[in-house]
Every structure is written in structure tokens, then in C-alpha cells.
Image (cartoon, rainbow, N blue to C red):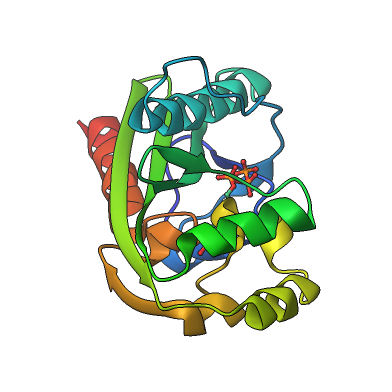
Length: 195
Ligand SMILES: Cc1cn([C@H]2C[C@H](O)[C@@H](COP(=O)(O)OP(=O)(O)OP(=O)(O)O)O2)c(=O)[nH]c1=O
């Protein structure tokens, strides 16, 4: 178990992010932050996902009184010009899955680390290609309950794994926290603290 010189926090309500960070072997605690996820007019998807990750990390650092290192992350699904976040309801989820069927989209995950040393960030973009998904499969998938809290209305780590024909990039980033890049951020901080 790796301990930083200051407490490490994960500013996230996502159980997937918690599991992924646990995989890296750092000791951390979860804190809750409230950051409204609203894209500004004309804001590019790459800017939006990075802004949210930074805001979550910054809100977490504020919540722990500035004494700690705080990870915040955000994941969006980008299909052409469209940004697909968590579906509002069944119709929204089915519309997203219909749009993703037979197409390649980009999953963007930004992870930010806020600490007294400043803010560091990594952006990871992964191409995911879906096979054609039938209307009946989408209906079935909705009834599993999986789509409702996930960007693009699917979880690659769950039943939607069978829709994925190809992935080019980081699997853990698609699930919500890129392991390699998150570890790099934390290792950089450990080195700064040692130096
Ligand atoms: C594309 C995809 C997304 N997701 C999840 C990752 C994120 O938890 C979620 C996108 O929503 P986010 O707003 O990034 O995160 P969140 O609200 O779940 O958690 P937080 O408290 O950290 O803001 O979608 C999967 O679990 N599997 C997938 O294949």
C-alpha cells in the first residue's frame, strides 16, 4: 500500500472509480463533491471533460481544507459533434444506444490531481466501435439497470461488453479512471514531495 505525504482523496461517487483506484494500491478515502455537469455554449468536448475533472478535484481540495491530494475525474462519450452523458430516462438511453450502434465513438476521460503543489491533469481518449445492436437487445439492456448512471448509456465492463467490436486505447479510461495516467500523476506528486 502506497501512502503519500498528505492524505489522498478521491472526489467521486462512482464505485467504478473507487475500484480502479484501489487496483493501483494507494491508500485513499472517498469524499463527496457537488459539481454541476453543464456544458457551456460552444464549449468543445475536450475542454468540457477537462474542466469538470479539474472542478471536481478543486472542490475536493477545498472540502479537505487544502490539506491533501485530491483526484477528480470525468468521462463523456463523443459521437461526431454529439456529447453523450448519463441518460435522463429510458427514451434518452435508447436514443443513445441507437446512435452508437454500428459506429465508432470516442470515450474521453480526464483525471485531475489537485494538491498544495498545484493542479495536474491527464486527458485520455479511446476509440470504441460498437457492432450493430438490435432494438430488442437495447430494450433488454435497459432492463438490466446498467445504462442509467453511465455516460453513453452503457458500461463496457458489464453486459454491454458484448456490443464492443473494437477498442483502441485505454480500457480503464472507458470504465472511468485511466490506470496508467492516474498512476503517473500520483508518482509525479510523490517525486515532488520527495524533492
Ligand atoms: C462509457 C462508460 C462509462 N462508465 C461510467 C464512468 C462514470 O462513472 C460515468 C460517467 O459519469 P461521470 O459524470 O464521469 O462520473 P460519475 O457521476 O459516475 O461519478 P463522479 O462522482 O466521479 O462524478 O460513466 C462506465 O462505467 N463504463 C463505460 O463503459
